[in-house]
Image (cartoon, rainbow, N blue to C red; front, side, top):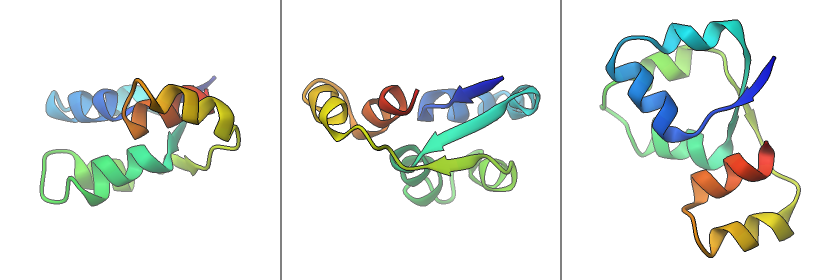
Length: 84
């Protein structure tokens, strides 16, 4: 099964040391979520686990939907919904 992960899911699973729960799925992470968790979260809990997990980083293609969502949500949430 394919799933799209948002920052909150990744961060919270890392905090409870259960990122492994996602191993049963094909996990896609939008670029904005990767930036938020790995690049901007450098040094925080779970960064290394997320980097090593092998999740697929994906670009979004529906910019119209993204821009609509972006008016109400942050970039990571907007990209995750658009990608899903």
